[in-house]
Length: 233
Image 1 (cartoon, rainbow, N blue to C red):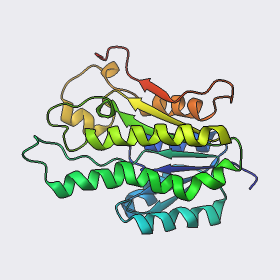
Image 2 (cartoon, rainbow, N blue to C red):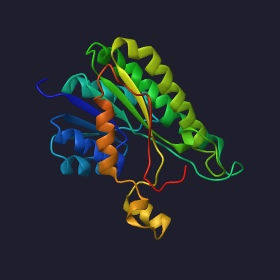
Image 3 (tube, rainbow, N blue to C red):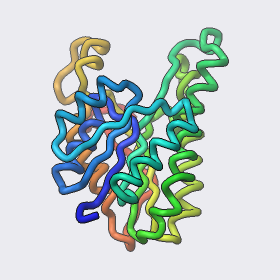
Image 4 (cartoon, one colour):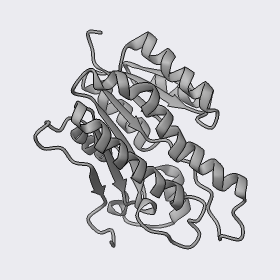
């Protein structure tokens, strides 16, 4: 392929779409994956050089087949961004077992399947990156996050295991903790009145993710935290 290939898994109106746009602007062919067919088609129309694919990660076999089809069409990716997430908010008494286990399937098992399908061939490139986006829930447990944080913590540990196993082959695995409310219309509606700099800007997050994906071999990071300057931590 004349252009490098980037796969963004889990494209929504925030970080995922901003990453797709950033990599496309930098000359990548971008394959975008989201669950909803209509939404991913609209996103593909919005990003020059991007192609959309509808896939539900919870259907692991179908998701794996989608990844193989993307590679057949566009080549082995140089960069994969695993931005997919599924959350079930509420107190521990209210989170159903089905929703709890489904969060693991999307947030953690989906990452494993992604690595199993793509990492062996990416390692052959000797200069690829698998970037996983996480959140503060991957580092601590809080009330009302019982249906999300455990699976994100498992995702972070899985990413670390992959980083240690795949790093010597040249494949860079990194985990980016986004400790922020991401600036999207839905977030502003949910959070109420806040100053503009309260929110993390998707385009700026995407810029940092792009940077991490292109760190030189002699200076690579695994755990990166991104937050607005005023965020309490």
